[in-house]
Amino acid sequence: MTAGKGRIHPVSAFPMSIAAVSSYLDTTVLGSTMAVIKEIDSTNTYIKKRISVLDDGFTVLSERQYAGRGRLGRKFVSPEGGLYMSTLLIGRDFIENTGALTVRAAVAVKNALKEITGLHDIGIKWVNDIYCDNKKVCGILAESMARKGLCDFSVLGIGVNVTTPKSSFDSEVSEIAGSLSDFVNIGFSKNELAACILNHLEKTLFVKDKRKAAAILDDYRDSSVIIGREVIVIKGDISVRAKVLGIDDDASLYVQYEDGRTEILRTGEVSTKLIGKEKVDE
Ligand code: BTN
Image (tube, rainbow, N blue to C red; front, side):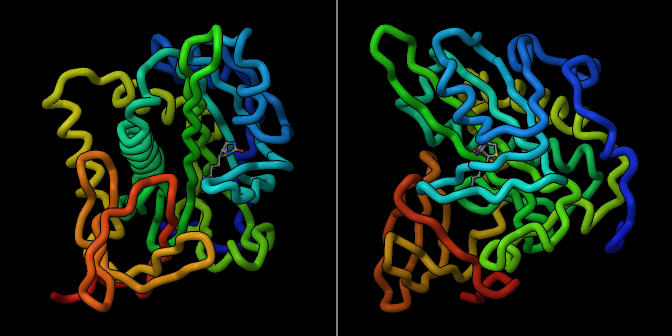
């Protein structure tokens, strides 16, 4: 079912609160302490500034960011209509394995968005953007750090366009961005959405069993909207056309350029832009 432009989404307008998010939570660590701040610079920055006094699993939720940050030092436009949240993970070895954090977070958020919207056409665009019908509806920023005198920590930030109007995105972003409300009636509140994301994150982030970890990686590959597609690989000022051949176990992207050369692209170095809508034939 499509909501259509200009529709009012009364459920999504329900105010966010710790009590309401908690009522949908089914976690032991994530969200055990929380803050809800209506408007904030950046939820990731909020946690990083207060790292020494916050608990493992602390989560901050907001409805607007005025200095939202994206991957590779980019800004993340964060107007009203979105859900912006960050969670602190302390001493969980993600520094050595940021690939695993990326993969597990993307799979969890994808599953949460599928569950809450009922939409099937939700996939992952490498590294960890969530797409619905060729539009980016969610971005994820994982930042891991070692700090002297403190345990290693990661901050996992998630921004979902829930009912964000197209006019709120700047021109560069509006080409690729979409909101969940473009695809479905928003019959859920941001409180439910936030809890649903945390519930799914707790199912993937702490997995130690090798077989379960491999199944999460398989889910990541199966949900990829980029494997088999033509992309523009962007490294700093350089943009080159390539075909995506696959994704490695460490979440690196395996691509082939038009001159036949292949390359393994590591997360954190590059970004990609999808071309066209379909997979490219062999
Ligand atoms: C990207 O698309 O490059 C990643 C975007 C990540 C945005 C989220 S919103 C919550 C958290 N706070 C931030 O400043 N960024 C992340």
